[in-house]
Image (cartoon, rainbow, N blue to C red; front, side, top):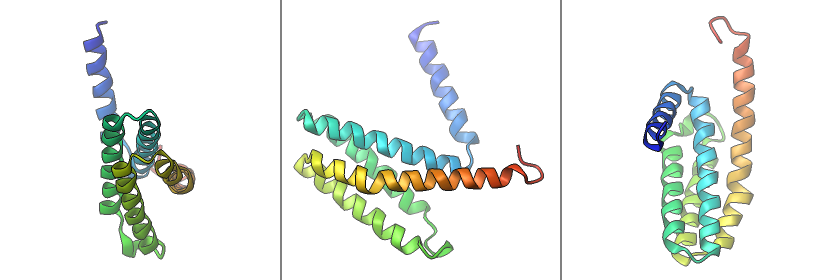
Length: 138
C-alpha cells in the first residue's frame, strides 16, 4: 500500500467517523483537537517557531469559535457562563499568539481547557451510558 493510498483511506475513515459521530462524540473530538493544537502551539512557542505556533493557535481559536456558535446559551443555566469563558479563552489565545507567550498558552490549556475537556468527556460517558439501556440504542 502506498503512502498516498493510505492517506486517502485514513482521510475517508476520518470523514466517515465525523459524519456518523453523535453530537456528544463530536464535542469530545473538538476538545481533543483543541488540546492538541494548544500543546503544539506551546511547544512551537518555546522553540521560537512563531509560524507553527500561529497556525495552531489560529486553528484552536476556530475551534473555540465553533464551540461558541454551537452553544445554546438558554438551554441550561450554565450557558451564559460557558459563553463568557469561551470569549475569555479566545482573548487569551489571541494575546498568546501576538506575544508568542508559551506560558499564557500553557495556563489557558492547563487551567481552563483541560478541565472543560474532562468535564465534557465525563458528561459524554454519562450520557452514553444512560442511552445504553434505552430502546433502539446500540
